[in-house]
Length: 130
Length: 135
Image 1 (tube, chains in turn purple, cyan):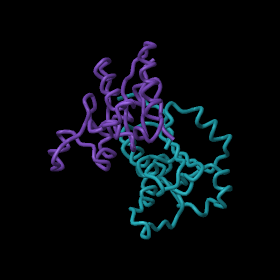
Image 2 (image 1 turned 45 degrees about the horizontal axis):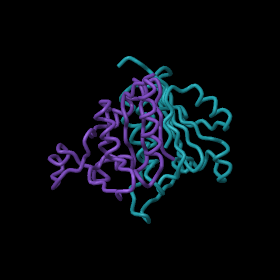
Image 3 (image 1 turned 120 degrees about the vertical axis):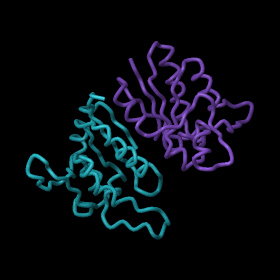
Image 4 (image 1 turned 30 degrees about the vertical axis):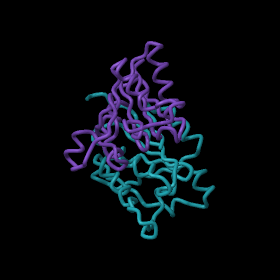
C-alpha cells in the first residue's frame, strides 16, 4: 500500500512524533511504500539539526534523518509553519535574510500543496497528533 | 492531476487558544487549488471558529474569522456543524456566521453553506471520505 504520514506535533513535547516514526519504520519493514512524511504545526520542529537531547535519550531528529537516508524518505516541512517557528533551509535563509539555517539532513521545506498531493496520491494518509 | 478525492477537514478546537484552527484554514485555502471534493466539519469547541462577532483586539491576535465567508468563492460549500456540539455550548445556528455560496447551475442563486448534522450523520459522512484531515 502507498502511505503518507502527517505529523502535527513537536518532538519530545508529544508522543505523536515517536508514534509517527515507529509507524513509518514498521510500514517500510512490512513492505509498504511511504510516499511522503509531511510535518505541520509544531511538527516542523522535528526538522531542526540543532536539537541536542541528553545522551541517554533518543534523538528524534537524527532518527528521521537516518530513516530518510536508508529508505530515500521524502521528509517535508510546511513552509508557512516552518517560517513561523524559525525552521530555515539555505533557500529560506537567502530569501528572508537570516543569519543561518538549521534544517536537518533529509528534510526539505515546501508548500502545503505537498500535503494535499500526498492525500491524492496515497492509498492512505495517516495523521499523528492530538 | 485528474484524480478527484473526497477531502474532509475536521475542526475540533477553539479558534485562538492554539494555532490549529488557523493552520487548518490555511490548508483548506491552499487545497482549494487542487480541485478536490472538499467538505469541512466543525465539532466540539471547533464550532466556536464559526461564531459571528469575533473580536481579538484584547488578545493581540489576528482575527481570521472573516476568511470563512470567502470559502464559497473557493467552491467550498459543504460545511457541516455538529448539532450536539452546538447544543452542549448553548449555541444555535443564529450564533454562527451566515456562510453562503453561489450556485452556478441555478443562475448564481445564493445558498447556505452550513448544514447542521447530528453526530451519527457526521459519522456517515466521515465514512464516505477518501481523506480525513483532523485539526
